[in-house]
Length: 415
Image (cartoon, helix red, strand yellow):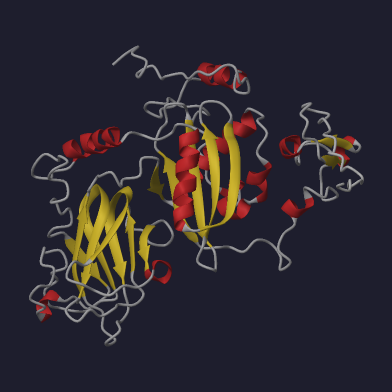
């Protein structure tokens, strides 16, 4: 006869209800609410927003604890992004900084220019470039802020075909063959008095001395602002040597003291061996006029040889349908405008935005034009009359009301 195994039956723990939202996931004792038990979601929603939620809370204390070496380190800027779509008044700004270990840390801000200003903010402290791309896509899709690739083609080509003399109409078929840097002016930091053929279209097949430009810094002036998203660069490539300290950046106003947008930096992106095909750098479309390249020596000798630089607007399925690259100064301008809306509509700022100020810098020090209206026309960005601004401010914090106001010209009152 089988022996019965008798013992104490393990009792399932009883779930407790959250005292604020009544869910059955209450797990945390809130010292700010006199020890009331709440769920993690309510804990996050109330965090740092009610008296008593401070460093004495075991759940909030780890979030406000800074490095034992002092304040947050000033990590170098990697890139800044802004979402395309403005149909709902929402734009996502992303500030990405580079960690010492080569990975990235990013701040995402949801900016509402029709109602509340800075609507949400969160930080990802450690991620690689592939994870950053996936995170950007996920956030943009969640707010439906992407643009179809066909709309991107039309958006980019319509303005630049008319405003720039390309010699022939731009279409999808001939975009890649149109070298926008061909025969453009070149400036260098070298005293070399020979011919400068950096933009003559010859990629160095002959490898003659006159094909080489020996300088540690070269700048190509496209002549006028142009939209590009591909740069091809050749150094001397016959023996497959590797050049050191390679960096490529673009600027709209020939300013390279922090205002530029870096599209390649071998210190972080890695060095590469030169080849007949050159180095192709692909990035989100950027309006620019000046392209600057740096290099210093190579794996064979101490010389630096620039052979050819070409620039293209090559829209394709790889084009980012969610974000475009912008300078840090422009990104700060967007954030400061949203900050002013939050302050004047008395919308509570996310605590993450206040806490992680090492990403944006001191928000009060960012220039802001007080002569402009708080809300602006969503089509042309012109100022709105005081009556319209007052009406939008009145309903800014009402979640069930969503509207925007056009200026008189865009509204069709006059031409």
